[in-house]
Length: 346
Image 1: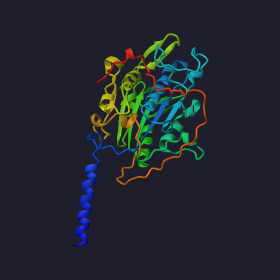
Image 2 (image 1 turned 90 degrees about the horizontal axis):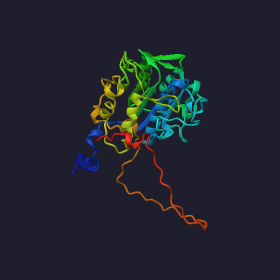
Image 3 (image 1 turned 180 degrees about the vertical axis):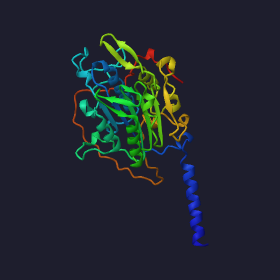
Image 4 (image 1 turned 45 degrees about the vertical axis):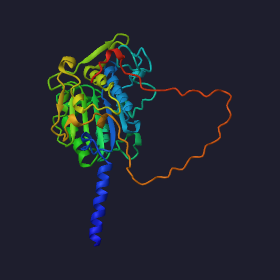
């Protein structure tokens, strides 16, 4: 028997074994990402823009609940509403008039705050052109296997988004920044969300591949607020983000909900504006893309058929305690809204 024939038989058997051992569901076959990141930006200052801070913190809390760690979330907040002297509830920020939960919480890690939230810093963050002394927590350390969720909220117009009420980034500048990211292999896919007036104008100039974009309003339309908290005295959340959160509250790490369901969360009857969607740059069918591809987290695993010896860790002697063993308290994320207000979706 020739050596070539033996090699052929061996390769054939190994291929059959691997194909039988690893079966990937169809909806996950076309996903090549290995990690998830989120860039969440509030661009507005001043007390009357309280709702924009609530918007971004609510999305922050949702992606964190679904598994993206703080080390892979870049949170940019232009103003500190929790410590604003006008805030009748110091050190808190609420996204619902029922004040069900403080979205500011005890474990919020703000990476850019105040005047650090600028057009220059935002573009530098995306493109990786940060100063050498920039700490790791302020860097977007993505690679060609990264799926990135970009969420922007604030005030915008036809082709621009205001930062700090003093400067603006244009749709062309944003499109060029994303193209730099693609050329530098800084992402696999991007899901771009923007909640501003005339929001869809910000994605019209995009020309880089693998970007799925949605906006709270079309050109010529305003993006409206949802409701006022009379105790706080200002609008506390925008309509589009409110219905996005209502949807996300029913999403779990093992959820089978898809991106197409997410794109339909806010019809015009609810938002009072027309939600815009751009799919032409995105290669996959949104109806076959799990929502957790962007809002969840991917854990890197190694598949092996070799046995692994696990050494038993020696047990340490525990000091004698008089008190009875305490039952560990079960902790979980509270719902962002009162449950009777959330409509359960199939």
